[in-house]
Amino acid sequence: MEKEIICICCPKGCHLKVNADENKVSGNSCERGAEYGINEVTNPVRVITSTVKVENGDSPVVPVKTKNPIPKALNFKCMEEINKCTVKAPVKIGQVIIENVLGTGVDIVATKNVK
Image (cartoon, rainbow, N blue to C red; front, side, top):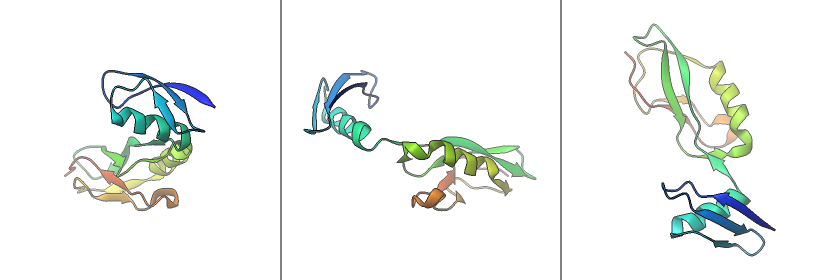
């Protein structure tokens, strides 16, 4: 099965043709594009970014992200978990907000300090 996708590894936006059955990619101008194409067709993953409510902080929310990509199919469930969460100030960059979200082995971490 051949699928056409646009590579997002760099600003070039190469138009890739990916044959998942044969693990072949064409249209890429670099090796990152080839790796992206195979991964996007066989096991798509995403880094999730959002915000979490903060109690008693100098900001009402703290930006957060997944420390590593998670399976794309879990995006909405991950957002549900993030939206349930509230933390108390202070919050430090890199602080784990949700450990092992959805059993993926990936933590949700703060990306900003909140006093």
